[in-house]
Image (tube, rainbow, N blue to C red):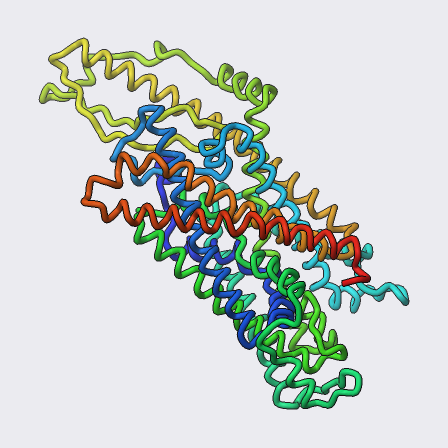
Length: 550
């Protein structure tokens, strides 16, 4: 039955990998050449990239474990810890995990944090999309002299047209349905990398016009584009948010894990590793080759968007721009859907939202007495086999569908009391199933309205923003560090504390030692990232308020 399939885990490692890569790899990777150029593309930058990759991978493991522990606690409190429920969709969410670990106030903070990252990320991608479409739009509608880059009516209309086309994807129920979108996005972004690599190789071989930096000759230019270490500590502080932002995908980790079939430890490890290491290799290639192109720029440096350093009339770069526009377009659902779900849960948890839900339930409810019981239903062998699913009323606050979990059962006709109790339970399940269908329709309308509100409000903000660099800097230095590292590590330490006494000491100590190593690593990451967030945020504010001194 379709309804049954919707409540089961349908995600494969392949679909989970593409969805995680689509959430992580995108327009932000175009800033990595600048990060490599600032920190030393021959040694320090690759080391920082590798360290960031390892820490991001470990933080994803902590996030998944904390999400599992949070749902185990809820299931145990609800007496729903059934070993036969392994194929049900997961119920973990970022804000529920934070709430289980730190209390109700943490739910609000984490919801605002994830929503802000996704919302402003959507606005930033919309601005970047407009920039990528700019050459085509200006070729059709010639702008006024001196217009330069930034928003114009024609550029904004082109951006909004693309957003209108991709809007239906943002109303999808889950991320597994977007697996083909993720694959197409990866093909597009790989094309961009190939274009940048080709032009950078041409630059190094002398096939591209080279510019002198002051009185230096071409040999000094070549040497300046290859360096092992940064020239100052501030260069490192400026580059760290760019490295961290490239690995931000944590807002989609738990939704993807909820869909993954048979989410054993080995399969989760395979999924995360086969996502992170290809992304790291991709980042290294685009960061190194893009930073080497500084040799062929007039200033001897690269910009925050490496594509801006190439000639707009370059046909190969035009192909790269269009592929990047495709990548950005296909990445919109990965940003909108988490923000949409948080908005829906927030609306459903309000008094007005609960009142609407209760009214819809009362209007669609019916009595159990509407179903007539008959002894004629018994089969010839004296047994009546009643096939039903144990379903519970959908909790709109978690956007969860009813979960399948009970096997077919047989009712003994020789025991009238037992038969009557089972039939009453069967009637209740049938009525609950109808309520769930009504709730599903209501949540679908709410889901569509929330998705369009989030997507189009971010798009309209992008229409009046000329540059999103400040937003990227602030998000990467504060919100991203808190969401991707501090909260997952803290939640893991809080929720995994009790696991020692239940699961970890009964196997001779091997699991206990592993548990202690994980907790120690979580503490180290927490102690390191809290001051790093403070220093990076202060540096981002300084860069914003004193741009002429930077």
